[in-house]
Length: 170
Image (cartoon, rainbow, N blue to C red; front, side, top):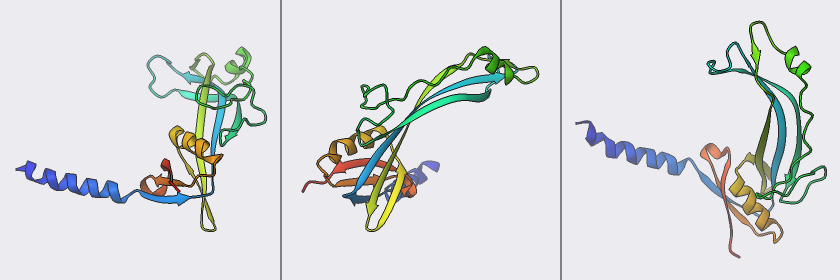
């Protein structure tokens, strides 16, 4: 009896998925990748069994990559993904880690976390939009940027991100 509703549900979900994304063509655009290193330490009453330890950030460094060009301040790269990286931040000392311990807590070892945040800024008419994106879109923009090739952008749900970028053939 319940199976007869399944095709209706699938059709409704497919329609919702198809209507919640849109496309736009951009001739002016800039892709950025903010690369960063961050030293962090986990704190908990029991680091092996506590599912949500408290995380303290000690130091971080970052550098902003634009359209695949080596940014000032980058010391590493480009790497195998075409990204440049900043200098490493100073590792926290034992004293610094111990200063942040709360009663009955133990501290984990300092961890160096690498992170990348991708964004795409594009113009439509007189307006400019900046949205989060992904590595694949960043790389497509890097390839198209030098030739100033227009791109067809596929936006995510509620136009809150750029999911895809494809060159528009002239």
